[in-house]
Structures are given as C-alpha cells and as structure tokens.
Image (tube, rainbow, N blue to C red):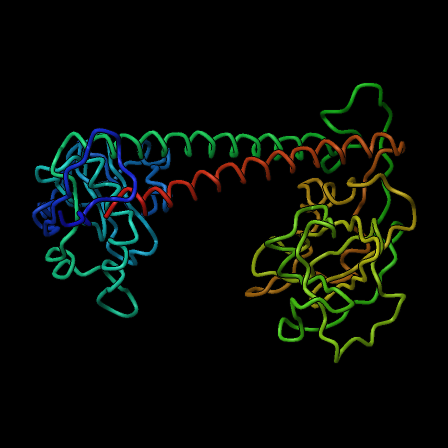
Length: 411
C-alpha cells in the first residue's frame, strides 16, 4: 500500500483518515456586507491584542457610529493590512469589523479549526505575499485559490479547535497573572516611597518609623566619566570591557542590572583606552540623559560586577553614591514616580527629550535612615521582578508549545 502523506505529524487518537485538500474559498466565505447599525459592537485593529486573539476590555465600553463589515458569532476576523501584525479574532458575538479585515464565514468547517488554520505558518507564507508597498495587504485573489489541508471529519476539526481554544485560555490566564503582578508592583512603587511634599511613605514595613532623610542629588552622588561610543563601536564578542548603552537601560535592563545575568555588550579592542577611575562598581547608578519620550532619566543600579570591567556609555550619566545604601534601594526609588516626577519638570527638547547634570543637581533624594529598611524595600521589589520574570518564562514556554502544535497538528 502507498504511504499516506496528507496527514499531520500529531493527531488525536481514533482518527486515521487522510486529510482532504480544499481551496480556501471553499473553506471560508468572505463576507462583504457593510453596515452602520448602531446596535452592533465595533471591532477595530486597536481593540485586538496582537497575536493573541484577545479583545481589550475597552472594546466593550466604546461608543462608535463607524461603518464596518457585518460579522456573526462563529465568523473569523483576519486583519489583512500588514498581516504580520497578527490581528485576528474569533468573536463570541455579532458586530461590525471596522477597517481592513476579512470576515470569514466557515463553510462546512469548524470555526475553531478555521481560526487556528489562519495562524499557521502555512497560511502566513501566502498571506505575507501581500500587495502594496507602503500599506501591504494580504491578497484575497491569491489566498482564495490556495489549497489547504483539513480533516474530512468535522469532529476531528472540532477536537483540534477545542484543543487550541483551551491552550489559548491557559495562555490568557497566565498573561493576566503577569499583568496582576506588574500592577501590584506599580502600586507599591507609588505607595512605598514618599511623594512630593511628604517625608514618610503611605505603606511601610512594620517596625520602622520616623521621617525619611532628604538630600539634594549633588549631596548624594559624585559623577563618573562616561564614553561616547555608539552601537557601531560595540561587539558581542567577549573582549575585556563591557559598555552600558542608554538604549538598553531604557528598554532592556531592569532597575537592578545584575552583571551575572544580563547580556551586556563589549567594547571593541581598538578602543580600549579606558581609565580605571571610570570603571563601575556595585551600587553605582547609571542614568539615561536622553530618550524619545518621558522615560528620560530611567536608570539602573549596578550589581554583581565582580570581575567584570564595565563602563557607562553614550547618553548616560554614571553616578557613585557618597554614602552607603542598601542594595536595590536606589535602583527602585529612582525609577519610581516619587523621584521621576521631579525630572519631568526639567526635561528639555521636543523631538528628543534630555536632562542635564546641572538639572539633576537640585532634585531630591529621599531614603530611610536605617539601612535595614532600605534593604527590605530593595528585596521586596527584587522578589517582584523575579516573580515577573518567572511568569514571563511560563508564558513564553506555552507560546512556544502552541507554535510547535500549530506546526505538527496541521498539514
């Protein structure tokens, strides 16, 4: 007997029949009826969490009179504009799709199966053969005539759709846990540092009392030298000196930069003429002095430098405390609104926001007099960061598992 090839690598037990091939237009009918019915809820690109199929809660609150393509429960919405943005959703209600959507009505096909078919790499390979340059759109004339494989049995299709539905629910649950962790951390950052005009925080560890110390930035820190090397001067090949780039501080690095854990680029050999006095130490603070928005002033506290030789790079202000602080305190305090709000009044520039050393000089640094209280604050937020990272890793594993399943459970 000839070997059957039109079957997925992984399938549910009890199903052995070869899959059939059908043109996409025979799997899904494209709805085109335009309506402006005010009783319908609208879905736009901005309402979808890209790549997840989740709708933002704001979609249920907004009021709109925009016209759109009418869809019904069980239809699949596929964003054809820049299909790589992965704007797709399987709504549980009827409404209007406003913008560049395909509204796909399943034809003798399970909705859940169709919804996951459009997420496969096979479908993406055709959808990304788009028309247009500045505003690329998936080409219906190409997609509609393209054959795709699917089970002959609706039951098998439904089992596949249900499997991915449950997997998506699990991913969403983990994402909500992550959002909750981040929200609690942000709330604590608001409450555990004294706000402007206050000398004690709203929330404090038991056993500590009394007003916090308050001094000007210039009384607390000495400035260190920083280099002006750009990304072009850096390498990820291990040399001898590592360089803290402001872009990494703004986007990548957490409040506490652990040199044993983070990937920090190296300076190329030809420009290693760096003074020993400029090398960073544990507890030093690296402040960004430029950004495209109000994140200017974001900083990180150095930790576990050990044998690493590290310098601060372009658009940074490296600082060394003149007095001892508990590990982690300054990193979290100086990134909290209690301190950062002071910087917002000092920002210069329009397209590029910047802040100068002289502007920093008169900002106020507030801190508990006891190192033990500083250490407890630093540890609390380090623990939250660790929990957030762990949760992000869980989500990433689930997303990778789903990606692998999409490859193995479809033909």
